[in-house]
Length: 69
Figure 1: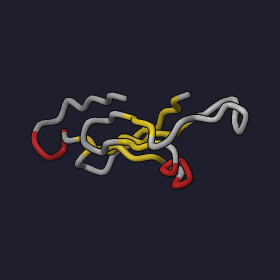
Figure 2: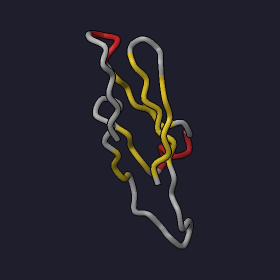
Figure 3: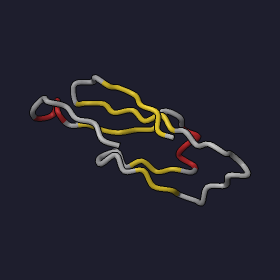
């Protein structure tokens, strides 16, 4: 995922996180780059849809959330 911020310096730095702690058992989200990777194989007999809520927060404390499915 990618988010942008027009601010300079610390206020323009973005950190990424997953809103649901349970998602961290399957997915890893790099807090610096926003890259999402798998920690284990997906089992579509267990779930037929995987949806994550990713939060991007800037250095000033502002944030937004997006769903990734």
